[in-house]
Image (cartoon, rainbow, N blue to C red; front, side, top):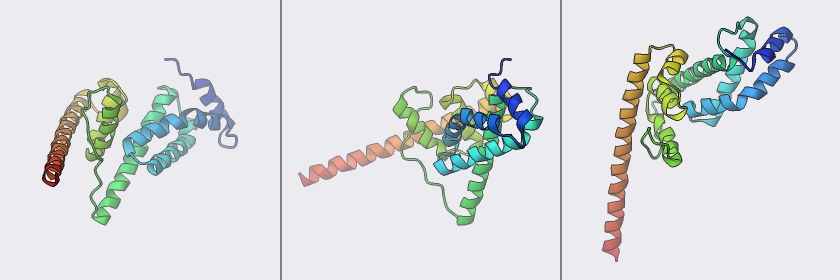
Length: 198
């Protein structure tokens, strides 16, 4: 399997730990993509930035032992998912300590749609899913990965991934319908209030 990063990774392996020119180039090449993926999962700029730092710190430590068993980008994806899981776990612990309930995103959407506006609403509603469901749903409907690829990255069976995605999609539809009904109730109340004042 062709790996466009292989030559640069090999140079970085030869330079580390004292030389970082090639490693810095790897960071520049992948940091924007990793930030975008972390942000989709974490829905927080500061948390995504911290995850990017954690990813490249882990890459710096483990790069000398990297053996090209998979493309470097795929390996970074796995490291990114692990960093996001840790961040979500830490956030969950902090929420429990504060006895706070995470704020829900405003509106919603159908996960199977290609409409950009509804796609944005899906991202907001994903906050209401537990991390074990949110990540495979995001990878399937937002990033467009095949079930088999998701299973490999998350170290799950393909049937487990399909079950989580199905459960997550069902929950997203329920949340969407709840939000729609609430919006209709508010609209009807506003119309009624106008009629009374008119």
